[in-house]
Length: 240
Image 1: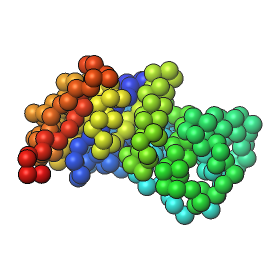
Image 2 (image 1 turned 30 degrees about the vertical axis):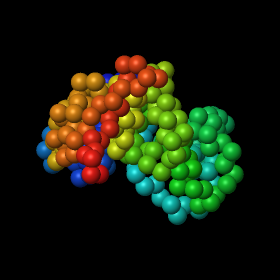
Image 3 (image 1 turned 90 degrees about the vertical axis):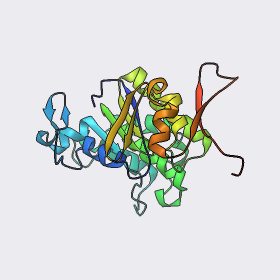
C-alpha cells in the first residue's frame, strides 16, 4: 500500500479483518512482525517519536473518556509536538486550535469540560485536536461511529476538503461502505488480515468482491438525485 500526498483512503472490511491493526502500524504504535512501514523512504521505527508526531496524527476508536480538562485544553494538546516554549502554548497555538474547533463545530464547547459532552461531541473535539496537530498524515479509526448523520457527512466532507486543498494525506477506517464509496477516491478492502482489493470505489466495491468479504448478498443501487453515484445495499429475501 502506497499513500501519496493529498490522497484520501478509506479502509473497509468486516470485524476482525485487521483494519485497526493496520492503522496502528501506519501510526507507528505497533511494530511490524514482517514487512516495513516507511515515511518518505525512511523506516518509521527510526524516526524519533516527537518528529513523527509532527508528521502523523492518529485518532483511535475510543479516545480517553476520563480526562479532567476543558475542550480548549484538549485541542491544545495537539500542538504539543510543535511547541518551542515547553509547556506553554503560543498565540499561534491558540489560533490554530480555534481554527480546528471552528472546522469541527466544537468552538461553542471551548470552555466546557470534556466529560460533560456527549460521545459524538467529544469525538469531534478529539478530531479537532488531531487537526490542530497540523500533520502531513491523518489516521482515523471509525471517526464517525458515534456521530449523527449530519455530522458524519460533515466530518467526511471536512476530510475530503483537507486532502484536496491542503495536501493532507487521510486514511480512515470505517464500517460505513456508503460513506467510503461517496467520499474516498481510493478504498482498501481487508479480509482476514489480507488486502482483497485496493483502488477507486467504482472498481473495487463491486457485489462480487463485497459478497465474498462480508458473507451476505449485496447490490449497487443508483440515485435519481445523484446520477452516476451508486449505493451499497443488502439484498433481502422475501422472508427477511
